[in-house]
Image (cartoon, rainbow, N blue to C red; front, side, top):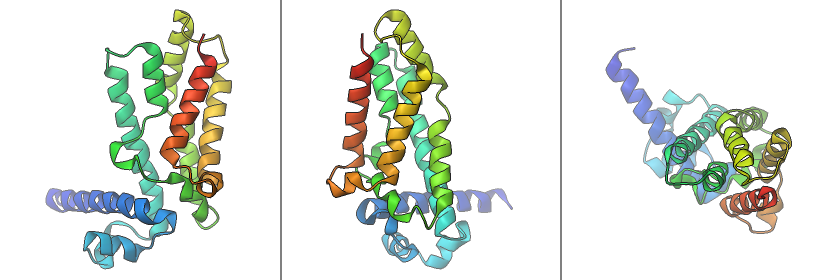
Length: 194
């Protein structure tokens, strides 16, 4: 594939992913490819040149979202104006600006239909904890955090996020995912603060 075509394909893919975030914000996980086509003013045929089907789009959307989270975490990590506790809180609660009002709790609606999406979310939640755990260790050394088990903390955080996504409790109680994430971070960090 020539460089121009490859770049054009990447641009189209990014545009579709950004459009999918918008549609997800409006309709939740039950959106259709027609919804994306309408949102972008792009033919479904063009969308299908970069994504084979909705399953592939959703799996790549998970990576797209988590890659943006990692970018936000990196900015926090490099911000020397923040103390250890504040860095820890911000890394745990990192969400890309464009996704702040996206209700990821609606993913439960498609869990049975697209188990690959559920698997991808779980994989991404369980990886890349090195910097977060390093901050937890640093906080314990500084006396900011209690001497708690890192693995227990990680399991608690991951399990709660999985429940947010895989259960319908947030939706039934009209709680946005971003609000639930903030409350989770405040509760966990408050509980380990020395």
